[in-house]
Each structure stands twice: as C-alpha cells, then as structure tokens.
Length: 136
Ligand SMILES: Cc1cc2nc3c(=O)[nH]c(=O)nc-3n(C[C@H](O)[C@H](O)[C@H](O)COP(=O)(O)OP(=O)(O)OC[C@H]3O[C@@H](n4cnc5c(N)ncnc54)[C@H](O)[C@@H]3O)c2cc1C
Image (cartoon, rainbow, N blue to C red; front, side, top):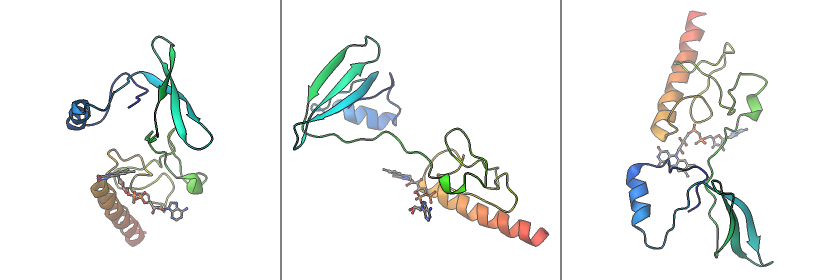
C-alpha cells in the first residue's frame, strides 16, 4: 500500500487491520511515479521516497487506485460559487450563494461525505426551497 502522506488517514480500526496482514507492506511518504507493463499486463510500479528522493521499482501483478474523488460540479460552475476543491458553497440550510439554487450532498462543502448526511442534506435543501417559495 503506497501512501503519499507521512500518515495514514483512514479510521484507526482499519489501519490496525491492515497492519495485521502479513502480506501487506505500508509505504508512507511515497509517491507513485509510473505503472509499468509488459505490453500485456501490469508488472511493476516505480515509486519515489518523498523524504530521501530515492526511487525504487516494486514488482507486482496489479494495481488498485484509490486516490480520492473530486466534486462533479462543472455543470453548475457558472451558476453557483464553488470552493478551491470544486465543492458548491452552501450555508447551514443548503442555500447556495445564488438565490433560488440549493445544493446537497457530496458535491457541496458539507463535512463528512456519507450517505446518511447526503440524505439529510437533500431533505434540508427541499425544505429550504419550500420555505423560500412560501415566503416570497
Ligand atoms: C468507494 C466508496 C465507498 C463508500 N462507502 C460509504 C459507506 O460505507 N457509507 C457511507 O455512508 N457512505 C459511503 N460512501 C459515500 C457515499 O457514497 C456518498 O456520501 C453518497 O453517495 C453521496 O450522495 P450524493 O447523492 O450526494 O452523491 P452521489 O451518490 O454521488 O449521487 C450523485 C448522482 O448524480 C449523478 N450525476 C452526476 N452528474 C450528473 C449530471 N450532469 N446529470 C445528471 N446526473 C448526474 C451521478 O451519476 C450520481 O448518480 C462511499 C463512497 C465511495 C466512493
């Protein structure tokens, strides 16, 4: 497991689990530079130790990429302000900074990207829209 940062950020319980596995090595402060193939399949990756700058090749049979997600908000980028990560900026009631446009879930600045949060935020956005409509 290759981690760019010098710490793992997963839940402790998951970190402990992975460290118990005898067939998993955790490489911290390591940048993946290249995935190498033989024309048919993946055979190795080249990584750089970010502290020493030293490069090494690791032979392997496959790669699973898990490097986070970016907000899919291009569609609305000219309609509502977003932050540096492309998340739609909302207030506590799911109102964007553009009157009449509401946003909810992972594409917004709401902390904790989880299903239960996204569902609650969806309900909140709908209630805010309803309230604004009734009042105006
Ligand atoms: C690998 C992984 C594991 C996860 N595990 C958990 C977990 O165990 N528990 C948990 O609570 N959460 C988990 N999550 C997070 C959870 O999936 C999200 O928090 C949740 O799905 C967010 O809901 P959402 O409705 O905001 O966005 P999404 O579920 O991403 O829904 C957005 C929808 O919009 C659609 N869409 C995008 N662009 C357009 C467009 N232009 N026009 C029309 N439709 C469009 C997409 O196709 C998608 O269906 C996990 C996420 C990932 C990636």
